[in-house]
View 1 (cartoon, rainbow, N blue to C red):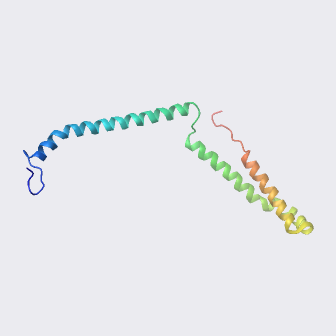
View 2 (cartoon, rainbow, N blue to C red; view 1 turned 180 degrees about the horizontal axis):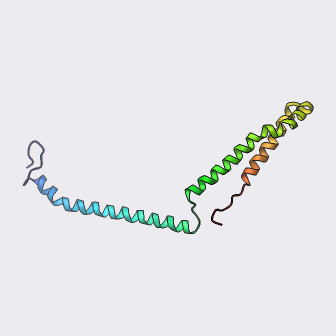
View 3 (cartoon, helix red, strand yellow; view 1 turned 90 degrees about the vertical axis):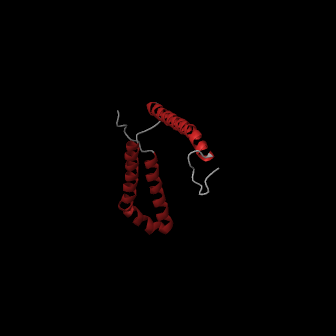
Length: 125
């Protein structure tokens, strides 16, 4: 019988059950941790193999390349007003708004194509 207050006391069925199951629960927890460890080790081995095959890049290299790309794109867009000022004045006098739109679109497309085709030197070479 269990005590009326719900407490598990020595010699009660609840105590016996808890005492009997404690080693089984501990073994189950240990097995779960071993399984988790094995899975983590397998993940690490897969990542290392992928890195050796050249399928992964170090995060700092990717970040530097991203910064270089976005910096180049930003600089190209910021240079547009100075680069196009004279041409836009000429177009504005001759063709009005449609001409300005055309010139801007052409130059923006050039900037984007240049950014897409941008190549970076591999630091390991």
